[in-house]
Amino acid sequence: MRIVLLGIWIWLVVGLTPAVAQTVFKVSGRVQDESGKPLPFASAFLNQTTLGDRTTEAGTFTVRNIPPGKYELIVSYLGYEPVIMPVEVQADVSGVTVVLKPKAGVLKEYVVRRDPERERWMKMFVQTFVGRSSFAQQCKLLNGEIVDLKYDRATNTLTAAADDFLVIENAALGYRIRFLLMHFTFDMRKGYSMYYGNPMFEPMKPKNKRQMQKWTDNRKAAYLGSTMQFYKSLANKTLEQDGYTVQKLVRKERKRDFVEPEEELKSGQVKMQKPGTFSKYVNYLYTTPLPYDSIVYRSGNSYVMNFKDLLYVTYKKEKEDRLYVSAMLPPNAKRNWQTSVLQLLAPEVKMDQNGNIEAPMDVICEQYWGWEKMAEMLPLDYKL
Image (cartoon, rainbow, N blue to C red; front, side, top):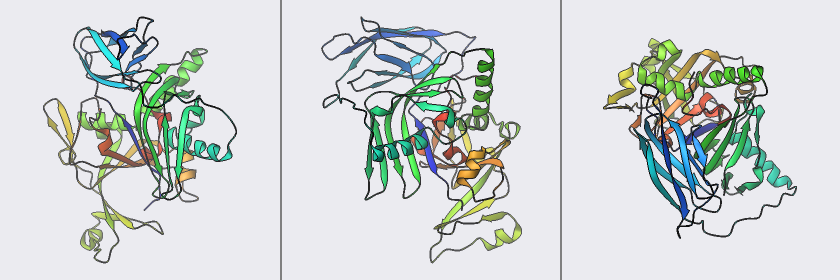
C-alpha cells in the first residue's frame, strides 16, 4: 500500500441550493457585545463563499446578492468568540441580532523574533494546511505570527490555533482567503492531518486581462477532479461523463487470522495492491465499477452516501501534479490519472444536489484528494 499523507478538508457549512430565476436577496442585522454596545468592523459572512460584509460604526451589516438557500452566517470580532448562525434565505432577511461574548483570557501581544524551532514547525504547518502543490507554491500566509503552534514530542503531534483570521493570498486562483481556524492537528507518527474552520473568499483585483484569464483557467483546473465536482457528479449521476471511475477497495489488517480472497484473486475480480514494506494493511481493489445504488441514495431533497469499505476514485481527465509524483510516489514513478480513496466515518453521510456535505468531519480523503489542500479550495458559489 502506498504511504501517502492522509488529510481531511473540513468546513462547517450548510449547503447552497440553486438560485431561482437569478433572484438574489440580502441578510442584514446588527452585531453587539453582551452589554448591547455595537461592535464596529466585525466580520459577517456566509461560510465558504465570497459573500460577506464588515459592520459599520453602528455595528450594522448587510450581506447582498445571496441566491435562495440554506447557509451559515459566521460573525467574528477580534477578542470575541465567533458565532455560527444557520440562515435560510427565501426572501430578504432583516433584523438579525448577533451577540458576541469575549474570549477567556487576555489578548496576546505578538512579538516577531527569529526562532529556528518555531520556523521549522511553521513551515510544516503551512505545508500541511496550504499544501505542497503547484498552486500552493503561489500562496502566502500573510499573518503567520498569530498562529500558536504546539509540538508534543511524546505523541509526535503538531497542533495549531489562532485568535483571529488567517489571511492567505492565493495568487494562483486570485482569492484572498480569510480562514477562521477552529482546529488543526498533524499526527506525524501516523501521517494523518485534520483541520477545519470557516473560510471567506475575497476575489483579488487582477492587474490586467491576461492575469484574470489565468485565474479563470486555474480555477477551472482546481474544480475539475475535485471533491466538490465528484460529489455533484455523484448526486447528478454523471460520474462517467465527468471522467470518474469508482471501485470498491477493501482494506485488511495483516493479522494471524488474515485470509486472502483467493478465488476472487484468481478470477480477476480483485487485484491486490502491493503493500508498503512496513505497512500493517493490504488493499484489495475490485475491478468492476460500482453502481450508483451501492454508493448513494436519495432521501427527499438530500442524497445519502452509505457505502461500506472504501471508494477508490479515479479521475481520467487530468493527470497528477508533478510535485505529487515526486513527493508522494516511489522513485521513477510516472504521472498517471488522479486516484483518491474515500472513507466514511459514519454509517451514512448526507449531501445536497450541489455536492455540499452536511457533516464533512465524517468523510476522510486519502491519496490525491488528501494531498490537495487549501491552495485548491474554491468557494461554494463558484461557477464554471
